[in-house]
Image (tube, rainbow, N blue to C red; front, side, top):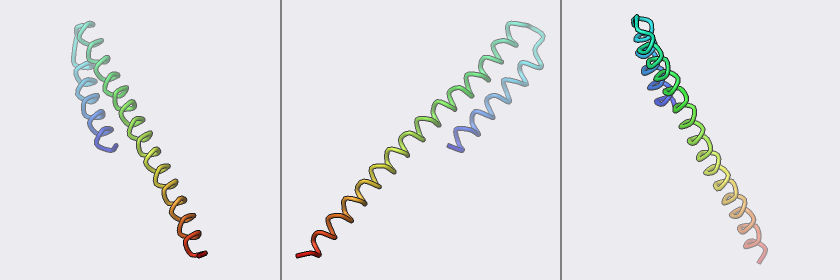
Length: 77
C-alpha cells in the first residue's frame, strides 16, 4: 500500500509541476487531470487491497475458530 501512495505522490508531483510551469490552459488542465487520476487510482487500489486483506483475516479467524472447536471435541473422547 505504501508503494501505491508513493507512486501516486510522485506522479502527481510531476503533474503539478507541469501544471504550474505551463502557460497553456489546456496543458494545465491535462496535468491537473493526471494528478487527480493518479490519486483516484491509488485510493481505488488501496481499497481493493484492504478488502482482500479483511477477507483473508476473516477466513483465517473462521478457520482458527473451527480448529479450536474441533480440537476441544476431540479431547472429550
